[in-house]
Length: 482
Picture 1 (cartoon, helix red, strand yellow):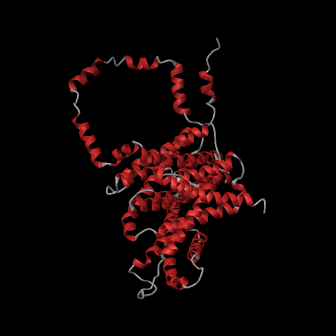
Picture 2 (cartoon, rainbow, N blue to C red; picture 1 turned 45 degrees about the vertical axis):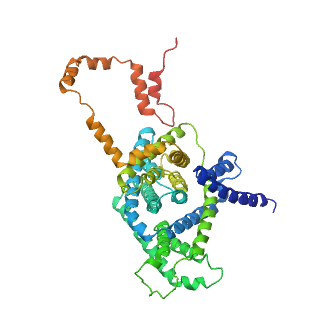
Picture 3 (cartoon, helix red, strand yellow; picture 1 turned 30 degrees about the vertical axis):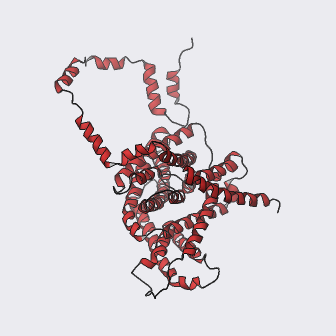
């Protein structure tokens, strides 16, 4: 008992701290998620008091249960009217943001490291993911329209599915030596459609018995248990249980307003959806599980150093920069500028990316260790950057920059201003061009110092590489001893 007492003490203090961090967020806009992850990093990688390996299978069970409850609980809060208006934008944002980030990260990784083409795309697919377990709790605490919150919730769930399916497909392609596009597309479509069908049908079936369940004492958690059953069945069949849990939550949360009754006609004054007590209960359970999940996420991360940090910083900044045009192109113009700004910030990576990052190393893929280490760095940096940008967007002039980007009338004013600029006369331009001694230009370029050329080549080729400079460049740039 004496060995367990410190753990119980820590759990009690952690729950109090979680509520305290939530209060801090309401005043300072510093996300409580960040503080919980910092606690995990301190007791894990920094102090070494506990490691993710000590949790074993229990750690993965905790993360899976947390993800199911968070998605189910968030689904119950979504309204069908809001969902209909948001689902198109969410799907467009998810696919645009994912593939844009994947291609850009893969290109930079292929250029800056020794990764082959398919391993570089594996890294891109992992880094392009967005953690719904981080996004959904965050957006609930932010002052946003329901439609905007729905877009981010659905988009993060879809994005995570894309990351899982495509990463696994790329790993199989590397092992087989070929990429089967039709098979990947079929798996994606099946993952969504089958999961949605199971979630919706399961919710209708459960709504038939829910009124009887309400009459049983201490049966409030049976709804969550049925969600676990749906999730397990979908996963055993080889499809995506996460989407099934979200679809179940959306359906059971709106079943009373759905006019198409499949199984029976509604009777007068007969509740077939979740009661307010049940909704409050699941909200508390989601909060409690979220607290332990983020601490476990901090424990699971591994600290990196050297050139890997440089590469992780480059890829993280790249993902955040590419998120801006993705939001600008796909999000409806009716979305408030402030909400669009928050959407452009919401690209944190989570535990799913950390789990996916370990697979290439386990499968013996060349560069698997690099993929895993860089992913750990991107996860930590993306969470920190998301939290920091949310704070700066709320408290500083950063909001004006995002407002300028996402305000159509301001962009049109800028274009008008550009067109009103005085144009240089063509005759003056021709005169300036003719005054240049064009035959002498190549010779000037050729007479550049050789060291300058080598340093420029070295910067473009080896900038950000997590390794020593190439031998031939080292030999050529060695200065003679005086």
